Image (tube, rainbow, N blue to C red; front, top):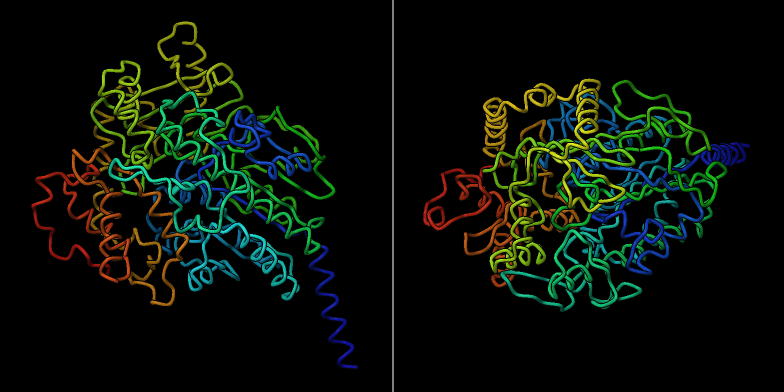
Length: 601
């Protein structure tokens, strides 16, 4: 009798789990929206699996992420809050005691879900390790030294996740990140002015299902078309194709395990491609994301919504409504579940996008208001002197821009000037100029329209308590803006003086390092290294950049047979870079670092 009762309880648990919709949030790293076939990619056959998913589901034509670097973007999704309301504005850990809200895994776990994450686990929460996950597969991937870009592993770990949830008798919430097409790109390396197209470790026995040739791809109009930049963009598209292969394996695992018809799938890219004028910027390509949804029994196959402007901050409230869980107070997002059901929503004309700082801690505040037709950008940091510190400086394409400019190319000189220093405000007609090449600020025909977007930005700032509202309203006062930026710089320097908070394996609440067994996952190390690749970089003639410093340290460790400690090398760089410009110049090179530079407690 007892045995029979136990079987009944197990069966009841399984049926209860099946009654609730599973949830999969699937992302790719650093991919432009228009790199996907159904979103108008002009290079053919880049994403056959994503295209097939679109035919089976629902896609938004006008969806945007709210931050254009990894951690702030992903935390906006997981928290349902803009970065200034979540506290996750950069790459530093937020003190645990200041996180008074609950994130997606917290809420779903409390409501009976089995929560799992694979990929970017240390980028997807306010601090790390984060207690909201039942399983963090990154720990196993690191321990077993598994190539996180191996397309086959996405089938295996999706299947294992489904099986783990079934064993627990619960529906699952699974966050999966596909690391491609994040740098390093497939079979491409450009270091110290030298090009290598040999297979990297992550590429061996792991090719994309189609390898594009240089003459098969279409160059983005906002980048220079030279033999070197074309090779780099080709490598990017090869990485996109490999990301699509991994995507296809995730979908296959869902179907093979029998949960496809009971799993809500949401897919998007965390921000634009890792090239100038895309990643870490505010242009259309920076924030536009291929948001697609498969909601069994709800979404109509092949639907393409052209009416609503959606933000990634809306994903959390949408998930909660979809599975009938009450929405907590304090969210900045708004559910679009009724749109997925075929309805219409009012006040979906704009979305709010933003950027604060890069991985090096350089504060460069920007805000943008984007609609179906136009985008207005406020580059508050741009004063004609400050130089933009960005994760795209180390790209070969950036070096090509600088080379062409130095050789007298007038147009490229203007582009490099814009890349380095930007302008205070920009306004673009995205229907005519989605590449952001023709700034309409100053054009009398658009003066009234620009004013309307400026008013909309102030209205949005006020509604969501953006601390930048006051200075935005004083943005014509250069002295006030300078004082505001100096204040941000001082705060940034104070954080840099505490290098431990930039360690994502650091317990920000206790002020101590994690135990050795809980070190940061290998995939995150690779991702962070690639993010750092050129965050504050400049040409080697001007000094040593963070990317170069990390590469040197890695090569030395390999030659000496020692373990490479990326975070220690980054701390050393910050200690040497006394003026915080992102380059160790000749004068700083010969100076000694301050005592205690490697202190982590």
